[in-house]
Length: 81
Image (cartoon, rainbow, N blue to C red; front, top):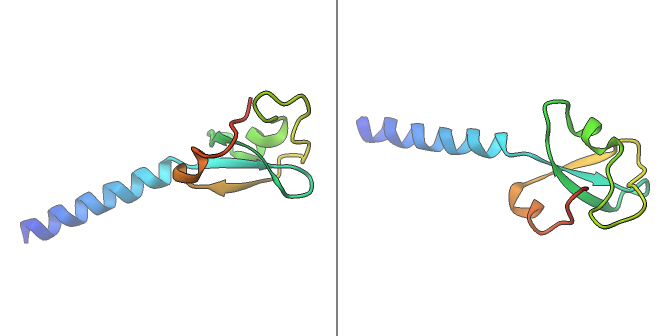
């Protein structure tokens, strides 16, 4: 019984940690990927409103359009400035 409860507690903590580490993938107006930034308490729409890709001159310019992306995939995408 103790092992079962320990296993459940570990799995629950992993799931909660994965949920907390959400990333926003800001999009261009045509829906293609622009850049990735961490989700803030204000939300992804606010994060992506004035976002631009790192080292890019033009902003994403999609009015806060975004999609959620996992931490694993976020590490391979261009960061937002």
